[in-house]
Length: 329
Ligand code: MTE
Image (cartoon, rainbow, N blue to C red; front, side):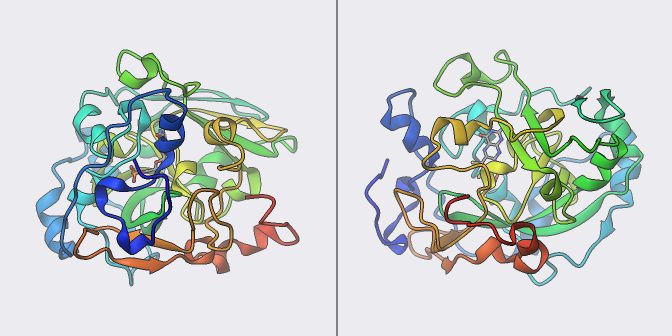
C-alpha cells in the first residue's frame, strides 16, 4: 500500500492510501489492497434499476413503502448501487475494499436489538424493527467523504437520529452519545484477532447527534442496507469523515464525558474525535484538499475539491462556533 503522498490524480484504485495502512505499518494484520474498480461514469438511474437486489422483509415493507422524499441532495448524482455496495470499509470483514461485499453476506441481521443505556430516562433493549415501524423513514441523498480521500453520493433511507434519541429522553447529564457495533467473532472474522480493540466504537457530542442532518440509516437505494454497508442499522453523519458513520449498531449509551472511540484511540495523532471534513487540516500522511469522487478509475480519476464540512457548512458550522478546528480535528 502506498504511504508516500502522490498527487491525487496519480493514484490508481489499488494504491489508495487508507486507514488500514496505519495498521499494516505496525504489522498488526494483513492488508489485501483495494479492488480494482476501473468503472466509467455510469448513469445513476440505470444503476438504481439494475443493481439493488435487496427488498425489505415483509413486516418492514409497509415502512419502506411510505419513505418520505426530502430535498436533501436532490441536485446530486448518486453513485451506482454496485459501486456503493462493493467498495467498502467494514474492517470486521477484512481490510480490502472488496472484502466486506465478499464476506459480510452471512451476517444475521434479524432479529436485531439495540441496547440503550446511560443518562436517559428510557433505557433497555429495543427491537430494531419496532423502532423502524413506529418511525417515518426518509430518503436523503448525502455525500460521504472518507478520511482516505475518496467520496461518493448515496441515497440513504433512515430516521433522523434526533427523533430516535429523543424517544429515550436523555437527561441533562447526557453530553455525548456513544455507539457500538456488534461484537461477534463467529460472524465477523476479523474480530478473531488483529489490532483493533473490538467492538468498533464511535461517539458524537449530544448537539451533533441532535443536528437534523444526522441520520440513523436502515436502507439505501430504496431498500434495506446490504450487510457490507452496515446492515441492519448504521449512522450517517455526512459532515464528518466516514469513520464516524458506525455500522451494525447494537448499543447506544448516553454519557457525561467524551467517549473512547476506535480510531481516535488507535491513532490519536491521525484521527480525532470530531473528524469534521476539513480541507484545511491535512491528515499527517496526505492532503485533505481533494477527494476522488466514485466512480473513479485510472482513466477518469474524477478528483474534486473537498468542501468544508463536506459542503454542509450552513447546517452545522454553528455547532463549532468559537472552537479551534485545527486543534479539535
Ligand atoms: N463501522 C464499523 N463497524 N467498522 C468499520 O470498519 N468503517 C468506517 C465506517 N463505519 C467502519 C464502520 C469507515 S472508515 C467508512 S469510510 C465508512 O464506514 C464506509 O461506509 P461504506 O462502506 O458504506 O461506504
